[in-house]
Image (cartoon, helix red, strand yellow):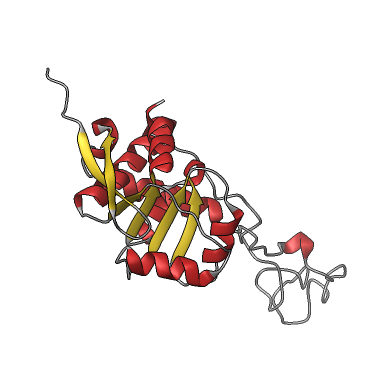
Length: 213
């Protein structure tokens, strides 16, 4: 079987000037769209974010009720042993929620395939922009705004950098619908949530290595 052809992508500068091309790994960027798998991974991610702090008191945890409300016979009323009974207002809850962890894990292979599928779909929909680097003169929001304007991106955008860069991360954090992620933290939920994806060449290489290793 013939190997798939290499995918070439244009590399831009921050001012959207073409500065070269980058060979993209077809094992990543030619992955078909897998809607069901993407939905499963997003469900896994959001489940792990649930606080799981809902808590109710059962009969034995409700305050009071140490004494029988009235004698067993002769009152004309129904028998009652405790005001903490679930049948009484203010009584305990039957099978109510207790603090728990909703998180679960899918296989590494499934998570990697979903990430590759989401990346490939960004490329197919022409919503992936690769830049040679993201470098700001100052840690100012206006520099990120100017860069996105030069790249002709007006939608929500996910900026992916290869290594920690406090200047870029700090400059972008106050812009609505703009998020900066390091390559090691790239995930399916954010790829689907943000309309456009901007990656540095180093980030593309780091992510490719991560999902194909």
